[in-house]
Image 1 (cartoon, rainbow, N blue to C red):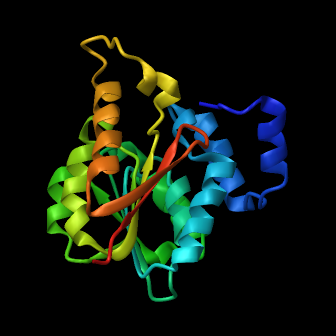
Image 2: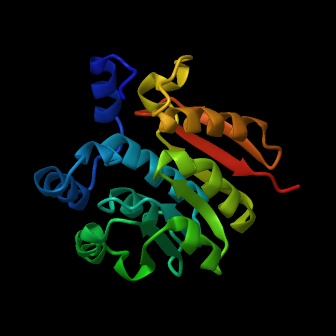
Image 3: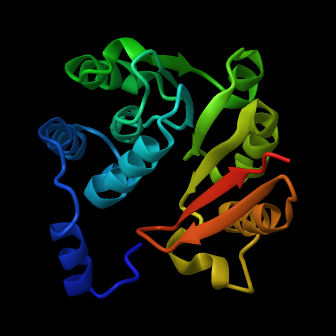
Length: 216
């Protein structure tokens, strides 16, 4: 997932904002107890998410794919005082782990957890959003986009993670079972061509797209 030379990557991290202590603890416990810890946003991308959220200063955030709660806590740093973050995940075993760290943070009462299929939960949400972060099953990225675009406030942004997929999006001959890569290639094309948004890919970590909903 790292496209920069290791020494440059280390320099970038060393000269960016420090990782909060609570998130360091969350990372350690995730690596000790949870499967697939590489799914964490991590120090640098977490600070990118935090910075974007602080620049937007959102009233309401939707996150699709909670995992252990790292990215939710990063995004919550930019919330308005009366703001809220809604985060959805299918893994029942992670709910208590997430809540533990949410409640240790200053944002515990602003973060609302949903357990289940995001395709079913999103249509039931009454809020509109200033930021949507998509970081769940890659095959459904395009479907999530269509579900949230009308719930996104004009000028709001959709953040999409893993859009470079360890460079696999450049492959021209894909195995039939590799549905994730095919879905991500189609999704990247969708974001580029959809007239409702303007999009830029940041080649950090495994690729992070920022798509801004046009106000016209």
